[in-house]
Length: 153
Figure (cartoon, rainbow, N blue to C red):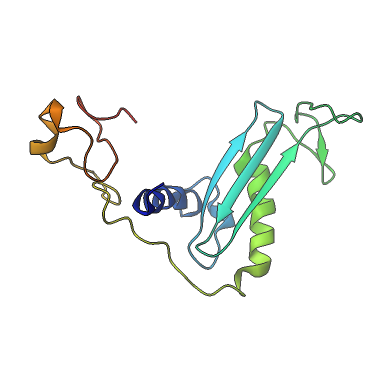
């Protein structure tokens, strides 16, 4: 992965821990980014990172034989889980672990992905000259723009 692409991914994922993000309650005293996930009710997870360190937390259901089971109804920390999500159950575990070391980490921000067109812009735009010609191919930043000739993400 090109460094500017990784910077763009971090720029998006840091939104999860910023005001309005699903895991904003786990925000640290420095920039952090993260991603929640689940495995169709069998497990939930949260992977978060700062520019210096990465950590993950996961809760998974299993019976006495170690076979995966649904989390619904599972007792975790004395409380039954229903409707488990990575942000509600795994992110607080990550937040507690990271808060314990947060003050020991030097403040460092992520690199702003200034070389990727449209990233960081509130309403990204695509130069008409490069997108109106289908033969122009992907934009020079390596991220196809939405629209008739770009990606659909």
